[in-house]
Length: 347
Image 1: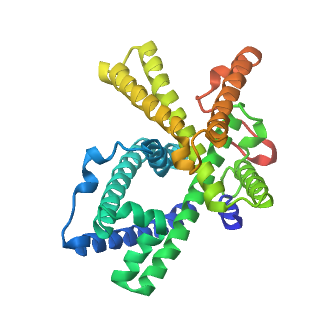
Image 2: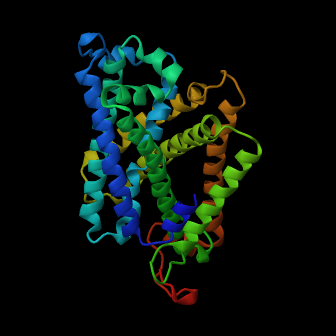
């Protein structure tokens, strides 16, 4: 947490270089695991049962959808760095497309390799019994203890990399909201030396410390409770954000009525909204499958309630701004004014 806090105050270039090195090493570990699964298949042959769509729609599919969405969280964050990119239009677009494609291929191939390496009929039981250990067990079995230990370390660095990435993203959300006066203006302060949004970064560090301290005092399991609960919150929250974005895109483009064809203006946003609404419903209705709780438990209602409550709070704050500060409300999404801040920092 301390390292993430410090890096969040430094130049984004340093963060990007560090994340790039970790990412390359982690992808190599994933590729080695995939190769082991396909080169040494259980039963002596590569089974395609894991790719059969018929095997997808079974009990607990809601948890699968929620976990899948959670696994993709962050792909959209490239746009948050547009102002710090030399060529935002090309860089952001290419990075978004590359992220979705590369991540999708790695996830698909790796899931398939797991079912092939362990065996299509044994993979569920093995993962339920061993958890992540089944993956590192295969790596150790085929590459030796040293490689297995390195892969374990890279799992830890991947969590660190995700924390650093999310930290930087949230810091820039806070900065943008402060610049547009949706949040207090001091939230838009940037460092005079590194140009990083240091107030947004510090606020993210403080909120993370508070949450972790609360879970620690309550003796809650860091994986079964903290990680699982907040992964679910993130998945459901991002789903609602994407659903809202799809609806907003359709409304905005049709109101403007120029520059876009029917597919871009109406069909694509409508299809996206329908699909996202379906996945959101399934994710919320099957919360117990991901949380590992009994159906009807309080958590099944409390966690989605937190997300809905946050959304309603945002709507109420937007309505308040529209009535009390119409100039601020009208400027939302336009980047905010360029003006001098205290201490010589600008935004």
